[in-house]
Amino acid sequence: MKDEIGVIGFDDAPFYKNDKTALLIATYFRGNRILDGVYFKKIQKDGKDATEKIIEVVKGKHYPKINAIFLYGVTFGGFNIADIFKINEETKKPVIVVIRKNPNRIDMINALRKYFDDWEERAKLLNSFPEPEPLEGIYVQYVGIDREGVKELIKKTRLKSKVPECLRVAHLIGRGFLEL
Image 1 (cartoon, rainbow, N blue to C red):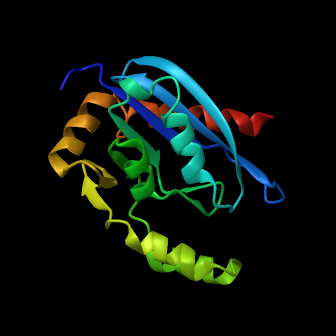
Image 2 (tube, rainbow, N blue to C red):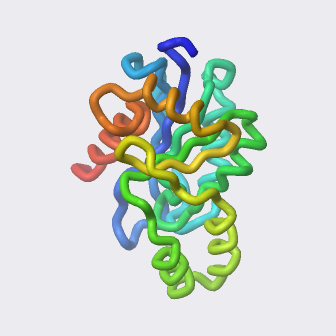
């Protein structure tokens, strides 16, 4: 695997309780040092459009050069859940979810039950995902790639952080929106 492997990472910007939308941020990197693209998409807060917006960005300008898709968790803009199976299926690219702490699915499902009429559908989607696995100080979920491939990709795409640069930079850009 070459060092400047093309990867794209997605995170969301912080938002306020009364916001109707949230900002989805993607950064395209070659390896861990070369930022080659930054993308923004509005998604519905607690909606169901994160999956489609991610697919739309991935199938854009850098599609032929993207070797993997990284997501900073599976929920964006509150509980707008990205369907990692559908993203993998429609883009033909591996999807790797990176999480700093092991999520508590029971707590997530209890929150869904409390706030959403369609909580069962959302819970079913969450429960369909692979269990998060510990990997070098983070947790990962993945489809379309094996564990050894995930380890190698993460090694080649991170710099000094535990997470790949595409995710770290997308997160930093999102934090900048707190100042607006």
